[in-house]
Image (tube, rainbow, N blue to C red):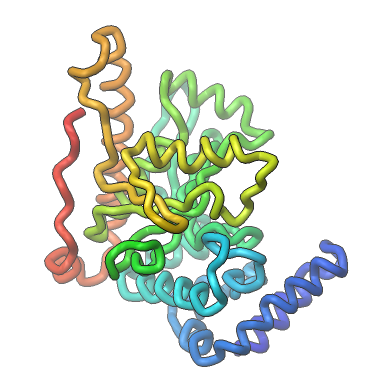
Length: 319
């Protein structure tokens, strides 16, 4: 089984990539064989066997075939531990309808709305295998065009410098694709003074709280898999700057910690002329969070037992 998946990956992009790039990818993915037992266990999981490995996914082992996975500097063993943690959690937490929608059905709709003649949707889907910035993606889509992506995996917090226990580790916070001009304009018209990145993080908050988690870990900009020193300002704004706005705390190593609910400045501390706009923004975020949370909870296995053993979620900040 493992050899079949490797062979599929090694032959998939023949003619699409330079020979040197394909050779490097082959050599990296061959490390799967050094962790045979772990990958055999991975391939036996229902979510992997029947959904993730469905036709069209030619890189089942993208945690090793890429130069980096989730964050720079992770060893091969740590990467394997991360991918096992993620898919074991997916396996034991969510039902078949969730797996079908997220991994094989084009995404699970977490929130949707029509405004100003345009359709807006936030969906949870399997992340692209072309990058290694998380195994799941929360995507904001406007009129069929993606405006923003926030990608994450469920990993052991100890790997991120936190207490043991699973936490969503966000390794991609990216938006403004070149073909999204009209769609982004529609978003600004429908939701003035707002941001696609906050829409996606509001959904992330709802997803985390649905499974009883009250923390999110975010990658530091310099640890990002695609970090480029020549574009340091962009990475700093998209990652460290964004985590800081959310009330994140910088930890030793490669991680920021964002406690949920994320920080919101009290309206009373704002100039009166800005309060109405701020309240409107927060109304949208709250609606997205609530919708994402309730949607995911409908797909939980053993929901009662899960919530009884989950860490309590703190009350939302004043908005």
